[in-house]
Image 1 (cartoon, one colour):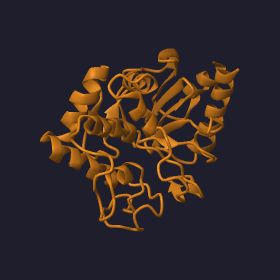
Image 2 (cartoon, helix red, strand yellow):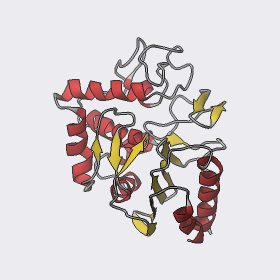
Image 3 (cartoon, rainbow, N blue to C red):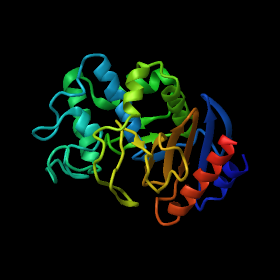
Length: 266
């Protein structure tokens, strides 16, 4: 995996990464137990806990949630019409993919109200503890407040690849495009005519961005703290840094993922 080794040359003070195949770590670099603020890589992990609450019957995916006419599904798929950091509607429900951390905070509050438990504690007990994610903690926003490690996110990726906490059909729903055909903006990359998104996970689709040449069915998320996670056809990668996302990452992440994927598929 010569392409993977190049991650160590990224322009950050600290970089840690792991590549998995069928749940097993194939190669890793850096300190897998170093804690990083992972920013919006928070969202797939938080969504997993919310889907656990749905399976337990505390909430329902299509119950009213968020602004009038919206559901929990809309919130998790960035289709509720509210802004990034505001609960005020910007567009009508289901008309535009508007990336929203506020929507995840709203969804987490719904779980809190339904379970009588703080959402960080529900996440810890329901997802992190069973998966052995001992160093993962949610501080503040359910949209971007997670602290985690490569080891913990590798455990999460392993769960997504072979679900034990959720039914496989639930995870497949999370990895499937919700409300297809919505135009939207991927932060840092601009507008896409069909901004494909699942529940918690971004779906690669036909976007030309950080996922590079990964398959259209690939899912994942990146964070503005210089972090990302993707899963595609039995493979998964976690990359965490302490260098905020910016122009340095745009070509580098795409080129890295393209090169790694070509080696994976060879």
